[in-house]
Amino acid sequence: IRKILQTLWYQVNNGQEIYVIGTVLPDGTVRGGTGWGAEFAKLCNKPLFVFDQEQDGWFRWAGEAFESAQAPVIRHPHFCGTGTRFLAANGATAIRDLLARTFR
Image (cartoon, rainbow, N blue to C red; front, top):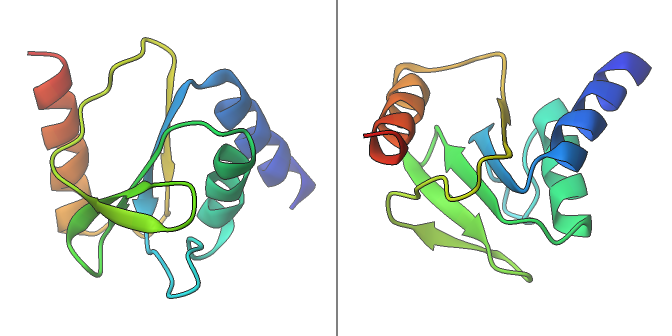
């Protein structure tokens, strides 16, 4: 587990925007190991976007809670993309669409 946390720390620490594929829980956290990276992004006050595969939509951390986000675009060259190892079809589509919107 230490190696996983180290990997997440390096990814989030070096990213200026964080994009996550996972599941937002009712308490405002992200499920599983992916949540560790999301929580670190919150602590560092970095822009955090989560594609919730269960809700089939993007959410943005607004400082106190997640709010719905419409089609985010990567705005910084140093971004971090991370997420669940259980990637669903809608999660893969969200990644593809995010990259297409950003790198036209």
